[in-house]
Length: 59
Image (cartoon, rainbow, N blue to C red; front, side, top):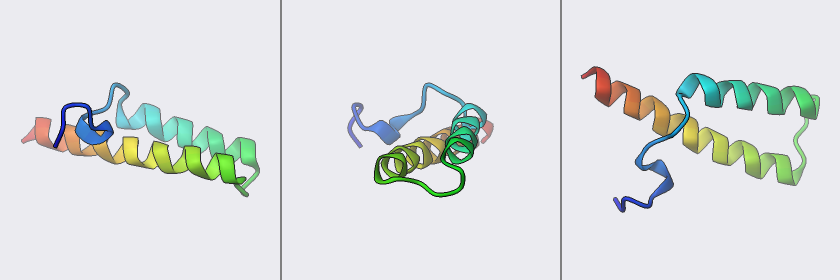
């Protein structure tokens, strides 16, 4: 994996990204526009990377 890959690690913690995801859904009122869906997908990828990083650190 390239060091420039967005999944190589996250600057934000999984908890921070999760809060952004929750805020996005609240702002959207439960129905995402195409732009919000794209933002959501990026946040989920970032959240997964943060979770993986936390698991690796714990091991």
